[in-house]
Image (cartoon, rainbow, N blue to C red; front, side):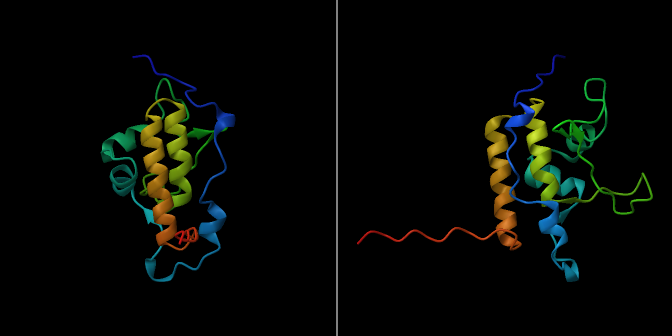
Length: 141
């Protein structure tokens, strides 16, 4: 199987809408935080199965650092218990955007799918108060 690589050059990846700092500077009491499990990320953001995402999270012959590499660095996905390798993975909105760009860069998703994933990330960021929605345009009289 031939895998198309470098569909999007690393330097073409823009700054991200949601950053780790935006997540960390908030008090997420009562569990109302933009944190997601593997199944939620796979289905809600990527429109794929949990097993599809789990395979992408594992290194393979063509992707020795997994499918999630951005600007030459492996994207680190946190675990519920960082001391245990078998602990469940936990994603934030700050993880989803770079993951999507990495999948696009490796040709695993189309540009159209990338655009839709970014729209979902943006919508979730608005709902969690991480981004301010643009002011509505005034209607001409």
